[in-house]
Length: 241
Image (tube, rainbow, N blue to C red; front, side, top):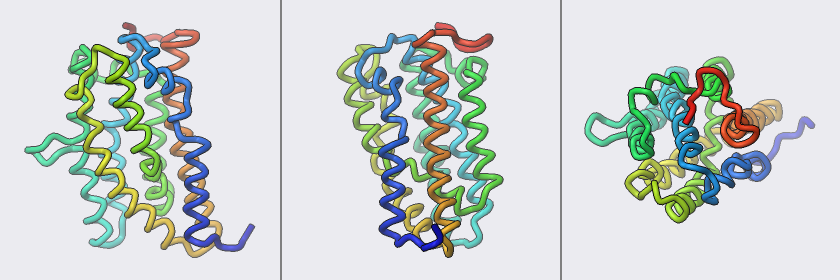
C-alpha cells in the first residue's frame, strides 16, 4: 500500500494495535490485577519494573537531544521532570521506589539492579537503543503506549487495593499523577505522528514503532511469568523471594 492514511485512519490503526497488543491483556497482568499473585510475585514485578521506570528519563533525554527545535524540546522536557522530579516534588522514579519500599524490598538492592531478570534488562535496553538509533518520528511514536495507560492504571490500582492487604493508596502513589500526565504527553505525541509523516512509508514506521513498544512491554511480562509463575524458574542471579 502506498496511499497515505488520513490522520483519522492513522489514529484508528494505532488504537487497533493497542487493542491487540497492549500488555493489559497479558496473563501476568490479569493475575496481578485479580489478586492471584503472592506478595513475593508482586515484589518480583515491582523490582523488575523499576528498571523500566528508571530508564524512561534516559530514553526521554535521548529523544530530547534529537529534537530539532526549541518548541519541541520545551514540550518534551516536561517528561523528564515528571519522572526525575524537580528537586522538591518527587518524580515517577522516586514514587516507584516508594512502591518497592512499601512491598518490603530493600531499596539498595532494588537500585543495584542485581536481581533483574535478563529478559527485563534486554527489553528495556532495546527500548533505549531504539529511540537512539531510529528516526525521531519513530522515537516519538514509540511513546504512544501511553494512549492506553489510563485504563491499565485504573484496573491496577483498584484491583490491587481490593485484593492485596499489603498495598495501600500510599504504596501505589506512583500511579495517580500518571492519570493526568499521560494524556498530556499523548496529545503532543499523537499530534506529532499524525502531522509529520509525508509518505505512507513514514506512517508505517509510526505503526511499527508502536508495535515494537507493545512487544517489549509484553516481553517483560513473559519473563516475569516464566520466572515466577509458570514454570517458576528464575535464572541464576535473579531475585528469589
